[in-house]
Image (tube, one colour):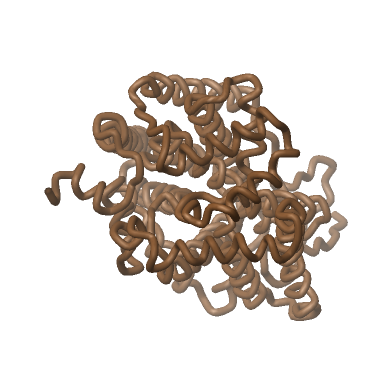
Amino acid sequence: MATRKLQARLHYGTPTTIRIHRTPCLTMTQCLAAMPSPAISTDQSPSTYRQPKHWEWAVLTVFLGLIGTAVLSTLPQVHYAPTGNDEAFYLYYAGSVAKGGIGVIPDLFSTFRATPSHGWFPPPLRIGYFIPAAIWMQNGGIDFAALSHFSLSAFLVSIAGVFLFARRWLSGLHTWLATILFAFSPLLLGLSRRALQDTWVTLLGMISLFLFLECLVRPRLRWQIAFVGCFTLTLLSKEPCVLLAPAFFLAALVFETKKTVRTGRIKRLVHCFLLLVAPTLITFAVWVFFAGGTSEFLDIIRIILNNTGTTNPYLLKFGAGPWYRYLLDFMLLSPWVLILAFIGAGSFLVQVNARDTDHKFHLVAQNSLLLYLLIISSSLLFEHAFLHKNVRFLAILDLTLCILATHAIIEFKQLFPGRIRLAATAAVITALCWNRWSSFSTLFVKGQLYDPVSANLLFLRSIVQ
């Protein structure tokens, strides 16, 4: 029977020539199955991505409805402070835009410049947050409750985003487990009740993270345009998110070293650099426009810098500490997921290093995602080690913890007999979700936790008095 050669390339792998018989019913699944190790399943490869089935959409919708209803039932217990905290400033900014339109934003910039003491609180630079919040308020009312509903909506969308993007890189089981764990994040559940911007910023940062990975692997124009737009909105929502840019570029450097095709490497890196520079330049241009000029914008930057160092008593008291303080906070929030995440990371690194030399870096889709998340998370921890620390500033790390933890769970499931593997996995996930929901209830609902700094977490855990 006649044969033909098919040139196939794994993620970052060398071209592999395989022979397949010419048959009328040959499918991509059969082609992938014929490929030598390392194998890649059809639901792992982004190139074979299929839209979620109808039953998956139905299950996801019901799941989001249950999570949203559960959080909504706790909102009447939230106590808001009308002045003197971040929530009050976000209500002031969003409420002003909701009443007067975008034309009032220059006035917000001018007021901030005229009141240097406001430098302790969120600046009006965060128009990427309070403009969408103001639009939301047009129907929800101009009050703290409307901002809380906006935070909850952003959290629910981020859960759906985890499912849709992770499905491009992980198996079906891994995707569902990671989505469920992420939905029960005590940190994000707690922040979704407040009139804060953290769930919105986490959503945008997470989408930017996944879009940049797509740009690295499959640099199509639509992914690049989507990334520039989303990352620009992320920077406009919270200026410290610019620290994601060095982390993204480091990931690009590492991924380029893994590629066996060296031709055009410098060109690809320059292209990635420009993808990161473009949102930054657009963001600065928008800020300068609303500030009324470059000098006025620099005045705002000076006010922010002068009030984030030794002059801010709150940051001095609650924001100091070593780099591993973030890990301590995640341990206080959800200890078992953090432990499983470390096990999952160790398992991944051992598996990669255990491969033979020829295939060590020829990563399948799942390992590409795990490597990418480890690079981004490690970079963010390193960068924030030199800044004042608050776990809600790095809430996006919960995504990495959930995916690594579920990787460990899937590895552990192989220890059980085939007949009870699914039941054992379901039992472990149920126990973890119950533990995470209990943590959320204890800390944020009963404990009325507003700012999850280490001192507050230690107090509510009865570790310190």
